Amino acid sequence: MDISAILTGHSEGLLSGPSIASFREAIDFARGRGLSVEPIVILDRPSALTKDMFTDAASWGATLFTTDYGDPGLARNHGVSQSTGHFVTFLDADDLWSFNWLTAAHELCMRENRDVIAHSQLNMSFGRERLYWLHIDSEHPSFDPAYLQIGNYWDALSFAPRRIFAEIPFHKNELSAGYGHEDWHWNCLTLSMGYPHKPVTDTVHMKRRRLGSQSARANSNDVVPWPTDVVLFTV
Image 1 (cartoon, rainbow, N blue to C red):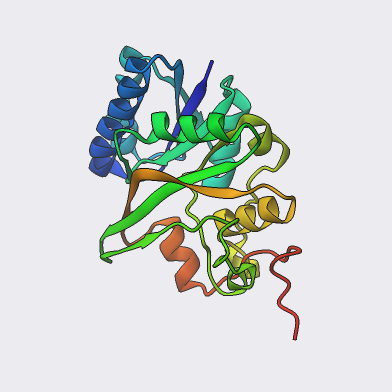
Image 2 (image 1 turned 180 degrees about the horizontal axis):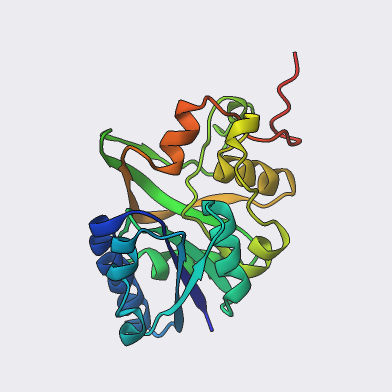
């Protein structure tokens, strides 16, 4: 299997409809280019409406698992544990991929001929916030790892060899203890272990900003990522 595509849902409800369509479109496009893709759906403590949105998942070839973690990072880890693809990538059930994401990310990773972590070239936020930013190449001369002390360079919807996700799982968020942003922490860990983070030309991820999301909860609680070799919070 070339790629395991993992879609994680929680309480997105009707918002998951466009995400399912985006997920399936990217998979169909990749299959049309000769890639084998394994669709996996992880519903973690789903609301009733979110669960209803995926009742026909088996009809379009997805394997569905229901979990009780209450945490996006642990839900992704479970998806990885059930996957069989050489590469793994993620989509949240309120976000969107560009149709060429799987194909272009796979092409970049194969062309590199080494273990790298791929990200979309462009991220566009919509909903409660409207903004966009370019993902930086960690090997570009302008890259400054010190920025990771105050902000996250890369989004969670990455694409990488399954082995990396299995060896370096996402950390459970601990908002009450002041720690969170599992994707920021994972990016710091993988970077400190020598894995380059690379943007994939001509790809876009569209990120919905809404109240009640894990990201919104982390921001409202003013949490920070767990310390790593990259983020030390020393004075």
